[in-house]
Length: 363
Image (tube, one colour):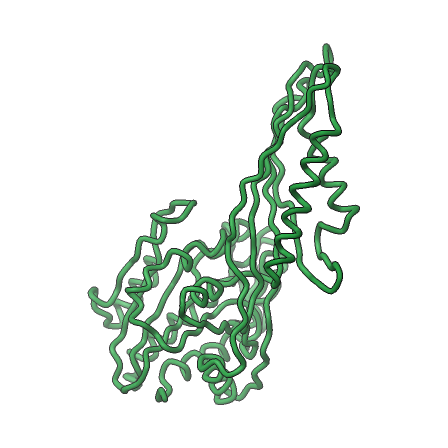
C-alpha cells in the first residue's frame, strides 16, 4: 500500500484523492490497513468506472523473489509461490492510473480500488466503505487467469471451525479413561471421504467442493488427546447444495462423537462455528460491465471468453452489495502453488485492456 500511494503521489495525485477505509476494523482478522481508494475526476462526461485488485497473497508466497525466465516471471525459491495472485492485478490497476496521468489521456470519472484480505475470505470487499467509491456504474476486477477470460460468476463459500472435545488421560497408565479427539476426528473424516463429501462432490446433478485445510491438537504422545480443532470449507454455486455439504459435515462429526467411549461410557462432544464467506453470483448476459469488458478485449486484439469460477472473488461481495463486477485475468498461472508463474505477454495485454476500459469514452 505504501508503494502504491508513493507512485500515485509521484504521478501527481493529490492527497485528497487518496483515502483508506476502515474495512480492517470490521474484519474478523483485524489488520494494519484498510482498502485504498483513489478517485480521479473525469475529463470526459460519462458514468464512473471502477478498476480494482486485491493486495494480499497467500502465506505460501511469503518471501517470494521474482525472477524472469523468458516470457514468464517465476519464484527464484522453488519452495515459495510467486504472489502474482494478485500483485499482477495490483500492477495492472496502478499502471493504468500512471499512464492516464503521465500521458494526460482523456477519461470518464474513475475510481481505483486496492482491497485487503481477499485471500482470507473477501473481507476487504465485504467490509468496504462503498460511500467512498463514488457510485461507479461499470466495475472491473483484475485477478487471476488469461487476460481474455471474463469471469462473470463465481461460487459461494462457507467456512467452518470444528472443535472436538475429548477426555484427557495418561496414554500409558490409563488409556481406557480417555476419549481421543484425534480418533473422533479421524472417524468423521473417513466417513466424509467414504460418502463422497470431501474434495469434488457430485450428487444427483448438483456439484460442489469441500476441504479440511488444517488440523491442530495434542501436545504429547503420552496424553490421550483431549482437543482437536479443524478448519474446513464448503463451496457450491447452488446455496441449497452447499447447505447439504455442511449438514454432511455436522452429521459425520456428531456420529463420530457417539462411537468412541471410555470405560465409563463417556463420549466426546463437538462444536461447529461456521459463517458464510461469500454468496455465489452470476451476471446477466447483457450486464453493461461485461459488454464493456468484451469490447475492450477485442480492442486490444483478443477474443473474449466468458467463464464462471469455482473460487471466490472480491466481485462476489461487491456484486452482492449492488455493484456488478466482471473479473479479468492478469496473466497469473497456477496460483496458490510453488509452480505459480506470470505470463508477461498476458500481463501486458491485461494492461492494454485496462487502459482501454479506463480511457474509453463512456456511453
